[in-house]
Length: 193
Image (cartoon, rainbow, N blue to C red; front, side, top):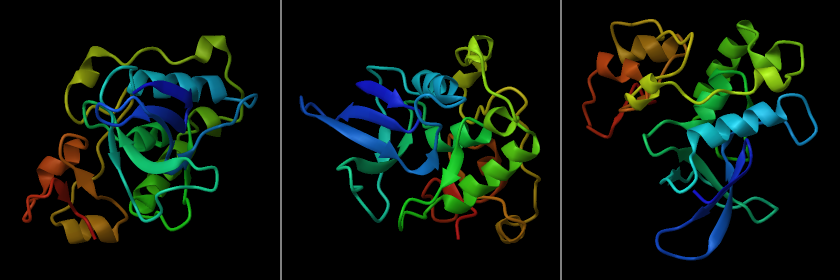
């Protein structure tokens, strides 16, 4: 991690290269500069992606946007999905960016939950300096931590039931729900389509 531009755009350095690349996070859209919740969303991204730490990038179908930014799903050094976290806690909306739809269903479900709970951008009010995000608590060091007020998805007997109800997929070391289901192909993902 080299720089947080805003809540959905970062700059990274690949490997040992000195070249900096601008990355647009897939799956979400945060408020633009000058809009309500811009500062909070940007600060939350800074908290999730500390400068100098490793960030993991995952491609989908399209590699670049029309601004020349690289398009990736971004995971922090602990394996937490940055987009899913920002959407889950109301800092961002889900966004289908062209054909990059690998996780759009999950992002839309997180958005619906945040909207129902009227979190941040869904609250009908603007943030103030008092609303700025505090650093993640110590519990965030454990895999699967999702933040204050987080509750797990309902538990189903099978992945098929979970998927038909609109839940999943779950990633190892990211979602506590992962442990509920059998990862037959051992790819670190359960309840995938």
